[in-house]
Structures are given as C-alpha cells and as structure tokens.
Amino acid sequence: MRCEEEVNRAIEKYADTVRRICIVHLKNNADTEDIFQTVFLKYVLSSVSFESEEHEKAWFICVTVNACKDLLKSFFRSRTVSLDELVEKPSQMPQDNREVLEAVLELPAKYRDVVYLYYYEEYTAPEIGRILGKKENTVYTLLKRARKILKDKLGGDEYEA
Image (cartoon, rainbow, N blue to C red; front, side):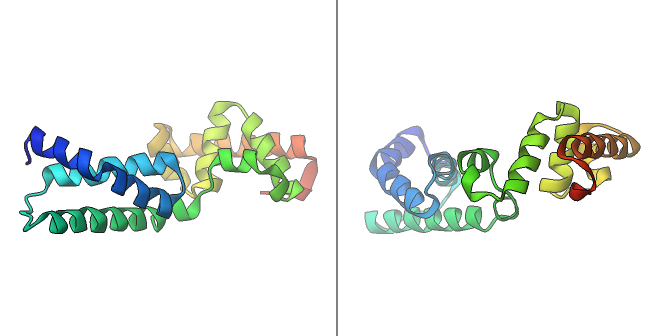
C-alpha cells in the first residue's frame, strides 16, 4: 500500500488525465467520478514499482482505459436504460412505451420495485424475494396485482404482460 504523500502526488499529477480519458469514453460525469475513484484506489493498493514517470503515466492511462471499457461492457450497463434518460427524451420513445413507463412510475413503491426488478432488470421471482426480503409467493402476488393495476390504467388486453 502506498503512503499518503505518494498518493496525493499522483492525484495532483494525473487527475486531469484520468478525468479526460473517462469523459471521452463515458460521456458522463457520474461514471467518470466512479472510474476516477476506482483508478486511484487501484493505485493505492498496487505494489507496482514504476521505472520512470513515463511508465507511471502509461500505467494510469492503461488502467483508466480498461476500467472505462469494463464499465461500458458490464452486464448492468448493457441491459438497462436510466429512468432519467427516458424521462429526458420522451419524444424518442414510442408513445406506448411512454405510457407504460409513466404508469409504472405511478405505481405504489411495493409494486413499482417488483415490476422494475422483474421486467427491467430481468430478475426471477425467487431472486426478487431474496433482494427485497419477501417470500417468493408474495413476489408473485405483487406482480399479479401490479399487472392488474397497469392493465386497468392502460386500458385492457393491449398491454398484456
């Protein structure tokens, strides 16, 4: 593990480089900050001895690029779209999908959580039960009730789940 002086020096020297690489790859400030922390945590925990400043800079660049690539190809990132993104760009979403999203967001929390985990994150009922601390049959009941509420709200069999 590296000493505090060494870490502070590295942050001062490479912070801008790491952030710029992250912004170029991720185009997102929140993800940039996550990767920034990840890179410097790896540095703190690393026992690599650098031959020169160029070697150290190359290490930071390589670790940053790889961390960005890992985030971009992660299962979570490839299978989800943030609700903020959907709400910000409603004109790009088909009308039916907007209606469904709005109806899901209006559900009471106990139904909304189950519907989100089941349909958007693609968890199974037993997995949802473990995540939420509920029995599997309770999850099935909540899903059934949520479907009925959505069906009533959205108008019938057209949105059959």
